[in-house]
Length: 428
Picture 1 (cartoon, rainbow, N blue to C red):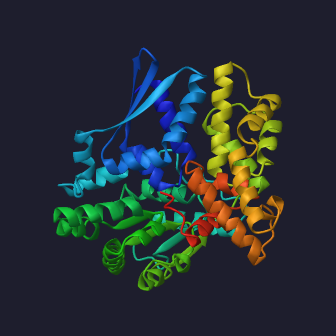
Picture 2: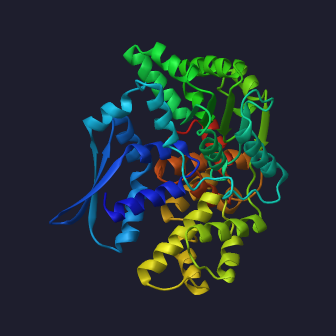
Picture 3: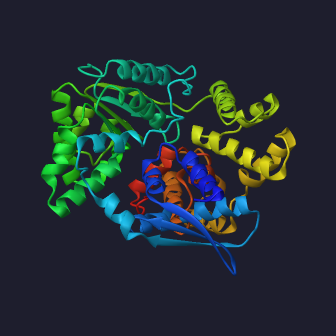
């Protein structure tokens, strides 16, 4: 894999930390570079049509954007190819040996996700999540705080804590870490291949610590909820540790079985909150130090005052500053950073989206300003949700945070709720 391929993959991983569906795609693909008469050719080798479809819908625009930025206008093209060899490896639902299973899962932990690099700030809830995770990493078994349920908006550090725990516990316990989407996918594969006994043995007999990311994805399946319920019971009854992350509290996962909701609520729950200015400053200083970027304090203050909604966005800004300054061979300064923000983070709303907002507003006899305002009257909320869904359907590459900014700075969870309530096409 070429240097630029590695850079693109790393940038996308940094931007999507905490969002396991996209991270699982990035882990599964292999990006290779070649050349043609028209310019550079980047080929994305994926393990199955399942991954090919998802990358085409949700990641291809991000790949094109980051490559265009790094190549500074140099022509290129992207192809997506299903690799049968990788498909066989990824589709195998059950490793043959327990040691193989443990090794496979431990390799998924991000080496930069440690308790030392996590910045909880002054929030009581964030400190509760942080210190509980540290305590469970020391004494995980037979804990009254199991299951430990961490919830909050995307990009705030839930996966960071999960990886920190996993890295500590893997040295002394049998740890399984995966996304709920992976659990669902392996369950479907095991049913199709007639390997349910192996699937159940893998997760119920070989696990002391069960770490599950984005548990809300289990809403999509009935059989997977049934299997997760029994897996949960087996691990819990033998005193194992169960830690789950989610974008909302258990009771708000509407399509999750009631018995699963109650079990997930039976231990300790902690809400990760958005970082305030002081915490954003501390995070910026820590991340700049980790990336060995010398950034003046006035630049950090300027970035920290911006309404960035997640730690992932903060890291994305730092990555953009680092790459831009390296390409231009200059040190980060306030003028450069202002230019980057003006160019990349303060763009006006495209005319096509403005037209959708205007048309919907007119049909409800309100103004576009009212539609994007904080007003919560039923009539305006109905119009706003309709416009949200239309923009999402017309521009599926826009992230939930992008949609939130367009519609008056709304949060990721608010946009997600609006799209689900109005039965918008699947986000992923």
